[in-house]
Image 1: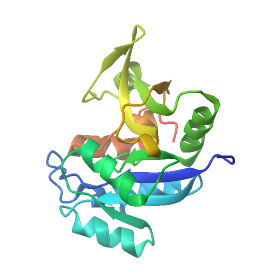
Image 2: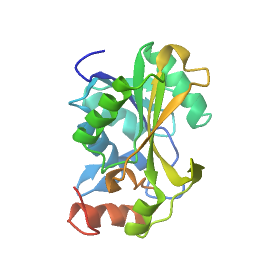
Image 3: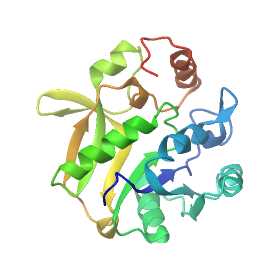
Image 4: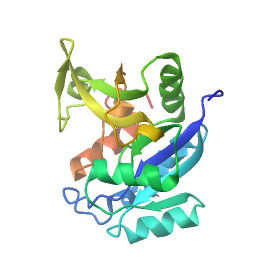
Amino acid sequence: MGGCHLDAVVMAGGLGTRLQMGEKPMVSLFGRPLIDWVVSALETAADRIFVATTDHVPETMEWAERMGLYLVETPGEGYVPDMISAVEEAGIDDPVLIVMADLPLLRGDIVEEIIEVYESVPEPALSVHVPLDTYRRIATKPDSLFNYRGRLIVPSGVNVLLGSKIRFEQEDYHLILDRIELAVNVNSPEDLAVCETILRGGLNSKI
């Protein structure tokens, strides 16, 4: 690949039922849609940015088109089927960065670090995780948790996968980053409030 660049797919087609503030990617954080924060973090490290949508998020589709991003529509059958559909629709065979649209604290330097690590490991895929202790520091509870070699970690919603093998299980390198920027998926008004606090410099922010 060289130059730490690859294509990125932002998964932005979910209903956002827990947040109940309309289309989740378009929920405002300090006057900007959540997805805008994510796309900004990807701009320096991604060759192309695809936004994967469904018919549940027409405003998000309009926003992506206005921003000049690549738009791929998926069937709305769930995260994994939609991710497969998006990568195939985009025609990506090389490694691709998959990012959820509800990670507004993601930063460009973190994205570059993830890609650099991916390029240095032999595995065809990479999954990014956050230690449980990171969540405890900001007093939030993760949706899922598992034990990896005796360490409790949480999936962050950022992955690198080989596009040509997107329909197959891929051996992945587990990258564990103690970064609060990766620890807040906005699924509730409380999560949104945590993001606002961190962006203001609270909760021992590294932003």
